[in-house]
Amino acid sequence: MPKKESTFMNMVVALLTITLVSGLSLGLVNDLTIGPKAKAKLEQKVNALKLVLPTFDNNPVSDVIIGKSDLVKDSIELFPAFSDSQFVGAAVVGSTEKGFSGLIKIMVGFSAEGNIENIVVLEQKETPGLGTKMKDESFINQYKGKNPSAFNMKVKKDGGEIDALTGATITSRAFCDAAQVAYDEYVKNVEVLKVAKH
Image 1 (tube, rainbow, N blue to C red):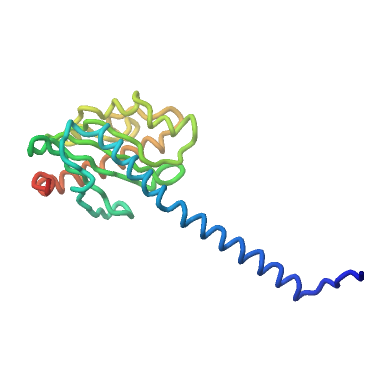
Image 2 (image 1 turned 135 degrees about the vertical axis):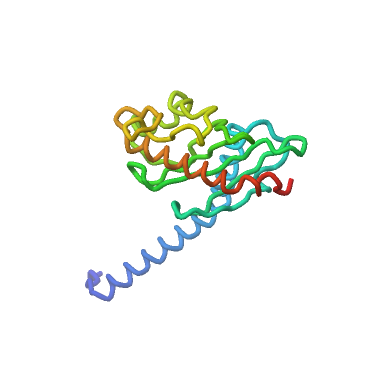
């Protein structure tokens, strides 16, 4: 049987077929994973709320308020917390693109008085072993119990009160920026949060 001659048209058809099959396969996989990804993000948010807020009995996710800041691209989520219909605080998602590797997104929990209860890192792509240490308790403990109205949330190199992570000053500054964005949104929206539907 004689060998088929390779032509430009045969190569184009083969390449087009491979591209079409690959594209359809990727589209199908993407469609199949959208639901589980959304569910995983919601679970991450719910778990973070439990870690950063004072004890609450409402559903902060259903009571979420969406804010907007000129400092960040995305909208900002504010989750009010109530216990026996009393406002006990709120969790605010703060973010910045100023991290060493880009986006840093954190959830900051505030008491009704504006003190930081706790902080959880939601997203980051910082250098393993350096910037990723922002998740460590020793770093986050510097913020706990502090009220940003009287606490300078900048690294000490910039005149603030935060000890920067060793070898990760850019990450530390970005974390401070994200925490400040969260606090500013909390202050701007606190009156709305206090009367949020619950």
